[in-house]
Length: 238
Image (cartoon, rainbow, N blue to C red; front, side, top):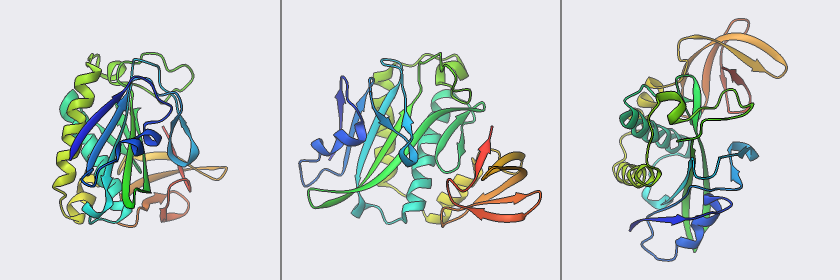
């Protein structure tokens, strides 16, 4: 079953989605709101969004339907969302490892994927915050929205309805792991470009070479050569 539910307001769509997983055939259940009050990001970070300007969306996918490792599933989700945004805006959207969306050097989407057991079934809980119509991000210099980056105004209801359909369809027809890795690397933000990274308290120039099947990012550093990193071990400054 593929359904999408709308909440006028909630603290976190990732927390609310479990209330809708009531049936045995709840395979692709989506929950959205345009007013999320306590959104969560990666590793306990918060995700703030202006009410009525942005979309908070969560899709629950039965894990038994996904024959991918957690890392590759994370990559595929990023690729599918990237494709949706690129087609929608007719712009080259990039994936900032592991799964932020970048449009014209600004972050427009943050994704948080959790794995939970609900009603005796294991689910991937895909949560994503989309900056759609917000114009002012205060002191968050690296944040932007579809409006600030393209000048395009999108109807939030149409946006989330079409997003849900796109994601659900793509997750029913998953390509090979190698195809997913190739697509992820094809759209990887700042791949093969000189960038500045922060490792601990030290800054160093380096070049992103590729992301691998273990979820690691390989970076060729100015001082240390080619090395793999997991998320939070290194920070890309942009």
